Image (cartoon, rainbow, N blue to C red; front, side):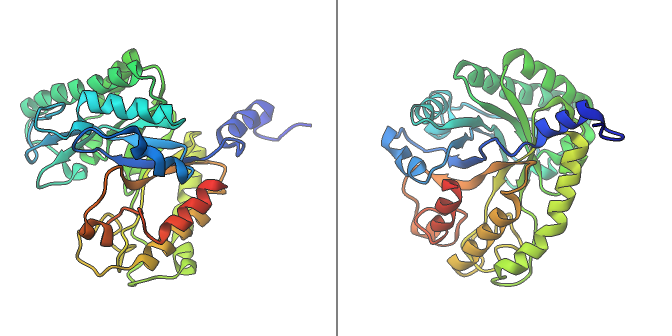
Amino acid sequence: MKIQGFGWFGFLVMFSFFSCSQKKINGVNLVSPPTKIEENCFTEVTKMNANWVSVIPYAFSKGYSTEVQFNSDYQWWGEKEQGVAYLINTAKKKNLKVMLKPHVWFRNGFATEFTLQNEADWVIWEKNYTNYILFHASLAQKNKVDLFCFSTELKQVVKQRPKFWTTLIAKIKQVYKGKLTYAANWDNYQNVFFWDQLDYIGIDVYFPLSDKKEPSIEELNMAWLPIKKSMAVYAKQQKKNVLFTEYGFESCDYNTKNTWGSHGKFAENEQAQVNAYTSLYTTFYDENWFLGGFLWKWHLTPTTLRSKATSFSPKHKKVMEVIDRQFKK
């Protein structure tokens, strides 16, 4: 039997990319703890049947400048080398796979809009950023990290500095020998030109879906349909599976309008969070090209009352029933 226009070899290649036999990544993005924690802080993660965690060693920049400060004395324990290594190895002891996901926090600005005004500043920033990424690539290799998500949401840098990314990826591969991805913001994953150099298409999934205070699951399902269709087409074009490097919804009104965060502006609404999670799982988890994802976000230490009430954290909220049920599948 011959498959017209494609051939058996092409069919087998595509099947390898989109096989549904692989277990989904049921991951959580960890909030780095400010001080050292005990191993039992991972108990709730394992009880919810998560099989991956993402460790995020932030770097910091005072606005859009050339500085990339990391592994500094003033940072939280979980963001420094010793803490990052501890979190990785403790997770592995608990039979959890690990994604390492360095991310620059720009004070008074968003990573997506970071840019610089002149070539001299770009050269300095690229050197500083490369040091940051290669430091963590080495840490990933040393601690046998399963997946290295080497950058997050640097939309303008991808657009303006293409040569830098090609060079950086080559340098990472000299240091780290595992799987690689990049976390593209939801609105520009199709403009990332280097997916062919990576293993997976990584997307931080904060698509605006509805202007309603509490849209139903059915309404959200409909809103996801064109987004899912575009992802499926793009995944096939790139011959890569899609990984949600971040996904999540606040437990408040209008949580699918400004999906990237309202910062406590709206009233508490746990049912809205339940609806949003249910719709995302219903829409994507049966798709062969979809690998799974990492929910945003999980505190290993107790959270404050304010952050618990309306934040992204699903911990000790109604939505945990939805997550538990999905992760057990």
